Image (cartoon, rainbow, N blue to C red; front, side):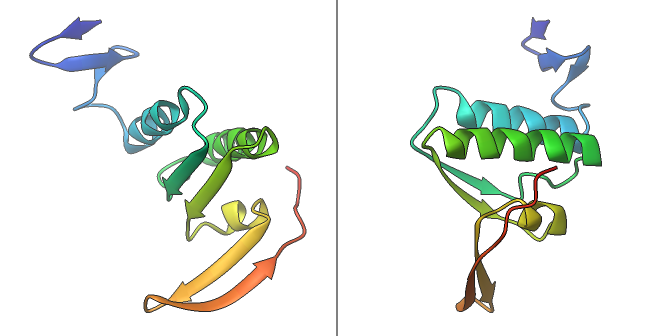
Length: 105
């Protein structure tokens, strides 16, 4: 449902009344439409429950497996467990690089 006053409705709720998690999932879906060569995801699991966190991380993994380069900025330890290369920044400076052992969900 769409109206000029309320914007696009998602599940009967407009963008103005959608939860943070709903807005996060919509933003991520819009970012991956058309299978871009590179996706930059800033806190892609913020405001998501654990089921949706794992769903987003599954999509990120599938995109990466199909050749898309994914750059993720996150503080989420669950996301960090599923990322294969981690660069740690502190105060804007590169502090560490690690290749991680991927943990499947």
